Image (cartoon, rainbow, N blue to C red):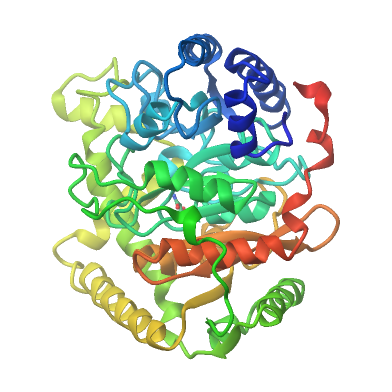
Length: 489
Ligand code: GLN
């Protein structure tokens, strides 16, 4: 069963070839083994999943209609709420925090009879590119256990790459779905800003945060997006537009479509990555698409402005963690001011503290116009330039990351780590739909990703480009050999 797609698993269940309880037992067992080997999970929901599966078996027996994700195991990043289950955000601050309500995307999945098998490991409050900032444990890359799976949604990427769930949810503020998808050889999709509700996602950078899926194939991305891509009145940034049937148009031809490539932004791309990127473009040319060179000099400002805007918003969002309302509370505080200070001191890790300080600095009255306001202006310019670019081309192609996965804990310098997000932050700053597609390997065990970015609300188009690439290549079919085994289940 571990090799099956979400759709195939559902079919198996609906056609009564297997029960939901059997699926649950199989994948829960696998999740435990994979977790021991990789650190992918923070919570595995043994009892809850088996109970839900039993209810689902009864539903099937009663002849009631079954949901679009009936019997499909799904892992959820631990910064999204599932009522009655811990939401830790990978932080000591929230290590005992139990969610009081369901995040909208998670609720929508369960309403379609999905089986949520666990909460996945992540960088603390989704800040990072390696999963090394989790307060609990690092996560390891299924292709090479010495390497990082990427971050911040590393655990969710590992869960799908090691096949203990065909689907998982991540959050992407500057690349945290696409980068780990690229590092672990799977698909990762960040929808248009506002397409998937963020109600119940713990906020990091509110103007940049997105919820999206990981999968082993594009059809499953489309399937889960049909379920989650819905208006939500509890999220003020939710797009009030109808749901879409992405699967209906996924096979439309790419003949004559135009793909823009900002070569001037790619001059520093390492040779191995450039080779894979060029080979990927060739796949599209063979399908009748045209590759256009576009000039996009503003892209080089994305990292500096992202690392002003994201920490600024984070410093405001994380102010609520003051020791009063949420779990960690300094026991030795002697005054209210000390309670605030010490709770943060004990509860937050280094990276989070660094971001809060940076964010507070760029928002301070003396420096606001030098940094924060300037960054907002450049962001606007960037958005306009994307509009102009999409006048000429249907999508823009970029590598997902400058390189494949590197050894865990090997990059110490924060600036070098921030540069991991070079090609992913543009789509967050402009709120555009973007996908990372497995596009080949540099070395035996180093997957890379090709990124396709579309105009706002053209999520279906992005999926279509990914689908045709998948149909004409084999890279996505490879499973990391350590995990390509039935015995784990
Ligand atoms: N790596 C980026 C950061 O550290 C992106 C994180 C994310 O997308 N959640 O901020």
